[in-house]
Every structure is written in C-alpha cells, then in structure tokens.
Length: 413
Length: 130
Image 1: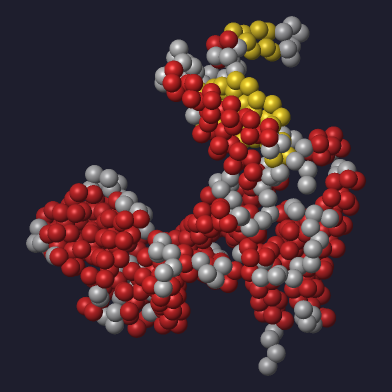
Image 2: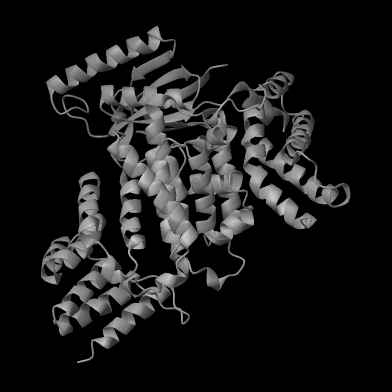
C-alpha cells in the first residue's frame, strides 16, 4: 500500500530539512538565505507533489529548487554590490557529496548554530529551527515565549553570525572536543526542557524530548566515535523510555521505585543499553575515560537493568556517582550520590551527607524532598513533615507537588 | 578570503594605582613585556592594524556638537566603574581566529577583552542603498 502523499511529504521534511538547509548554508554562506530558500522549496513541494508525485530523489529536487530561489533572491537584493553578489554565488560551490561524516554539511551547521559566541537561548533556537525544522511558532510555544520574541532572537543570532563572521566549518582538532561539549549541552537542554514540561497542557506543543533524541541520533551518525555523543544519546533514550510510567493517570509524579516497569519502552532501553555497553567496552580497551553523559547513562542503565526496584544494584550506582563527583563535585551531583549512598549504607549515612550539602542547596526543592524521605525512614516524622512542606513550596512541577503532598500526608501522626 | 576587522577593547577599573591597573610594579612590567610580545606576534602574523593604551579615564573630555554650540564636559561619556583602558584593531579571517587572539591578548594584558566586528564595506553599501 503506497504511503499517503501528505504523510510522505511530512516524512521527507523530517528527513531532508536539515540536509537541504545545511547544503545551502555552505553554498551561499548565509543562514537567512538558506532558511528562506529551503522553506520556499518545501512549500513548492507541498503544492506540486500531490499532483506530480514524490520525485525519486526528493532531497536533490528540494536542493535544486531551493538553490534557484536563493540565486533569485541574491539577484533581487539590489542593495548588494555586484562584487558581493558574485562572491555569494561562489562562496562554496564544491559538490555536496560528503566524503565522510566529518564533511557532512549538517555537522558544520550544528557547530555554527551552537557557537560559543552565541547565547545559550540563541543556540537552542537556531538549532531547533535550522536542524530540527521546527517553525518559529512551534519553538516559541515550546519555550513559552511570544512568537515575535522568538523570531527576534533567531534574527539577531543570524545577524551576529554574519556581522561577526562566525565561520561555517567543523572546528579544528584542537577545538573540537570543547565545541562538541557545547553542542551536547544544547541538545541536553532541549531534552530537559521537554522532560520537565507537562505536554498535556497544550496539545499543540511540540515534544522537545523527541526533537532532542532526533538531534542526538543525528550527532551519533555524524560523530560515531565520540564517547560523550553516544553517552548523551543513551542517557536520553533510557530516560525517555520511562516516560509513560513517570506520571500517574491522576497527574502525580511516580518515582522510580514505584514505577510500573512493564510500562517502560523496551526498544528504547535496548538501544540505550547497547550504547552503554559499547562505551564500557571502548573505555576498557583503552579509550578515553568516560565523561559525564556516559556516567549518567551508565547510572540509568543500572536502573533499567533491574527487573524490579528491589533488584537495583545500588553499590554499582554509588561507584558510578563516585566517578561523576570526581568530574563534577557540584552539590546537586553529590545530592544524587547521597540518595544512592542511603540505599547502600542506610538513611543515617545518607542524611549526614545531605545535611552537609543543605547550605548550598537551600532553595532547591529536591534537597528538601530527599531530606524528608530520609527523615521519614529514620522515624523522625515531625522533621520529615517540615521538610516536605518546604519541598512543596519550592517545587515548580505540579505533578511533583502532588506526589510530595501525598508523602507528607502519609506521615500521619 | 577577505580579512575581517575587529576592535578588541580592554576593560579595567576606573581607579588606577601608582602601577596603573596592576597590583605591583613587577606585575605591571611583566604585563608590559607580555603585551609587547603579543603585539610583535600580531605583526609577524599579519593581524596587527593598530594598538595603544589610553591615559586614565579622568583625563577624558566629552564633546556634544549636535546643537548650535558645542558642549564640553569634563570626564568620560558613561558613568561606570570600568572603562576602556586600551584597544587593538586587528584583522582576522573569522571570529574563531579573532577570539583566539583576544584570549591571548587578554592573558597578556591581564584584562577582560571585548571583541566587536567593524562594519564591512558591503554593510555600508547596503545601508546607503536601502
């Protein structure tokens, strides 16, 4: 059975948008022209393909159509000098056949969009628009800002890339590691934004976790040898795998120990585990020691490996957190380690560590939630109730507040 | 590929000690030496257009000639705790190159550096025609 045309077009859009934009960006050296020409080409496809059929090489068709549009626009812009026009036509017209992953235009585009000279929110907006293919309206909605605000943010970012001469290229070997960390930070931010949002409020709100995973998979295809790229993808897959089990039907947060593991997505877990094992083997074979995303992924894998909460290998988790703390001794990481420590050495030991962190994390709701739980397990109900109250005050997520309120109520007494 | 021009402005505190913006005579002399070496390298590699240090901000005069008669005010235009102490004008092929140079310059002169591109001739042309 042949695919309905509008579904086929939507699929082609998802598959080809980034490649078309990236190719145009390299060819003409201008993101604005690339974006506009690509959008016009897709609009033309929407008009023509239902009648003419999907072309055998849809990506090629789109690039050819977009290139013609771009040239038209450059000619039309009479304020550009003839010299500038000629320069733009010839910015880079080497053939688009990628020699290998490192030459893929999309990789250059990602590094450009995530350049450190751009503010984080600008990097996120540009990446979602130019690589994700989300509309400005969709991105605005996803981040709960006005569409005009988001449009301005993207325009300014493109303007800065042009005015400050941010180059379109994959960074040199000396810089690539740090620059890649910047790209991963953008993807992870998008994922977390989606993870914490309650998408149920607005059915038109695009799923940022899906977008982040798509970007993570693209990075994995483009940079298959990088451990942290694999680690971030694994982390996102293993986290997203538990999505359906995380919130109850009544809109309450369900913690890991209470989740219905039958509701976990086994395909995503298998994919995540494969990546984690690949990295463990690579490190064991003398590869670079694991960074934060690999460690976080491994921690998640210990959880997703356990058939039930009771079977969780908490000592493994503590050992992994020890390594994470060595990389990043920030209070939040140490708080998460303390939770695992309490499972291995008992709540009193965990509480001692948490209390050491309390001054630094006073305004962080999770600190109080963790304290409340440990105090409860130690039978110190009155103090536990106080801590739950403080946690509820500080918690931003409604599902979490409902959960904390229930725990406070369960203390009874 | 045509070179782009950037201004790299060094910011420092308004209050200068007897050693300028430095904590001691040794620090000052070392910074002068490092900055001199940095400038030499800029020249060797074709990046150098201009560089110099500015006298203390209290030596500035602000001029407003927009009205009928010019108005002169003692002191800098902006009220601030930190001011431009000096600047480089450099040529670089792109921002990555400029930022790498700025990082080295910042280390040499012990100050925070702001990198800002100049308008290109095409920008001016576009403005003229718009």
